[in-house]
Length: 242
Length: 340
Image (cartoon, one colour):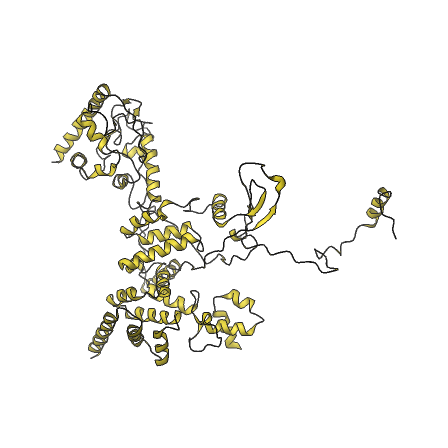
């Protein structure tokens, strides 16, 4: 059973680039405005499902999951292809030498061209990274530590890895994935809200006669010599002393 | 006099006591608020009613919350370290358990229940001279490190020239930008919208949502209160009280239900799980918070204790009286059989 699944997988991997090339030659590329999906717009295999009759059958199935990418993970073709294992389990990177490069390739799809041996997400056009596609996102991080798997382990290209991290963060924001928060201590803060910064400013108190605005106004005496000097300079402008 | 000073220390509402230093009458009022409902010296009803911060209320709520060490110290989603094994004697083991209980009590401290903060609308200056100076507002913040955030001056200069104090929402956002807190976002995440909350409630992750809410919002903000009330309503609708038991939010849930006079669901849940003492304490809390209700007055008249409180409550206030009385009878019978 496992062997046959593997064989199907290998055949699918091998034939996929061929099928893709055929599509590129056979069809026109149509731009699809997908407002709700975070997936890259340059996916060449997409056609609007309501387009004209020159769609082939495989194009129909590709576009079927554009709006609801989470449906694909329940479909028969997904289960047949991947079973219960994560989508990256049977992927192997091609690289020179024993030690793989510390970063995977920048992207698998440039314009119309797809590279040889594309990463687990790019090789299957039905797998779309979307924040609501929780079952897919859960395959890419550890449930006990919350740490996202390194791309050198899963084999995804850097572009998809960025989209993946973004989608995981959005899913946590929407409450679809569990997030851990630090314990908040409330004992040390004062919630009385009486300080002038947050409470209405009290009106200024009116001065009674003889009272000074600041209490130290009256007690500061000017230096005698300075006072005499200033009086001498502005002699012409001073009021006559009584 | 010595007794009065001792009780003054015990009362948590310390600021009331400080300001009432000279006023002995107010001192007496604050002390009577804590103690029994019967010995009231003031005439106003609001003074008799128990507050969340009262010692007796807090005692009852902590006892009802329970202390399930397995639930409090369940594994968090964090970097894992290899486990540590220690060889301990019996006394050392007891000490370790005692320390764990202290730590658990610290983790189970309830978030404060505060009245909603009054909006800040205070104009400091109006300079028509500056009108049309720019198309954007300027926000001036005091970023000295050692001031509490609630004493920080944050003012906004509008394009029309008015200089006003920043509103609470603006204050929260600016303080998060300059002094970021871990886990808090500048703008509220979409999980706190009602449709997303419903999805989370279906997955029974009420505690996660409340933890997130506590991290994101200030305790006296409107959104904080709204999320808590929505969570409590959902729990009560489906009877999922056990999700919050042994967490820091159970006290708040019980307090909310008692204030709304809807403790039947919670009582029935406690009785189904054979938590008789907790049920009795809940009814006692109800009588403290609503001293004018029939159940409280009858209980006070008969000086009831323990299961009699439950019976009186079931008779006068409850809508599921049959179940409560049946449960009390079964408990008494099993106790009698056990003692034989």
